Amino acid sequence: RRPRTPLSLDVLDRLARTMPLGHFSARLILRRMAHEHLVALDGPGYLLTPAGIDAAREVVRGHRLWETYLDRHFALPPDHLDPSAHRAEHFLDEQLRARLADELQAPRSDPHGTRIPPVSGDDESLGEPR
Image (cartoon, rainbow, N blue to C red; front, side, top):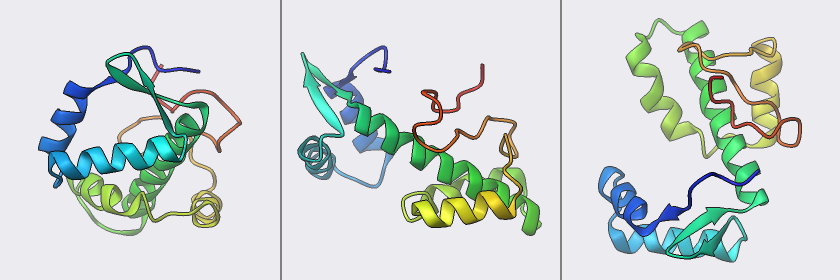
C-alpha cells in the first residue's frame, strides 16, 4: 500500500530540524534510502516503496514492543518510554523483535494503547489506530 501523500522536501526539512541531523545528513540518509529502494522520487517529493513500507513497519513494531517491554519490566512513567524506544528501534533486528514478542506474549497494543503492527507481510497496516 502506498502512502497517501509523498514525503515532500518540506517534510524532509522539518525532519532535519526536529532530529539531531542537519539538512546535509538528512539528504544523505534519503539518498541511501533511495539507493536501497526504500523510497522513490515522486514529483516534488518521495514515496515509500513496498520495501520501505515493510522496513517502516518493522521499525514501528520494534519501537512499540520495546515500549511494552520497558513498561512491564521497569517502573518508568509513560512519558519516559518513548525516548528509550526511539533510540532502540533501529537496533532491534528480526530475531530480537520475535523474542520480545514471545516474552511479552504477543501483545496487540503498546502501553499507550496503540496497535503493534504484525510481522511484515502479515498486514499492510503500520499499526495506526483504526
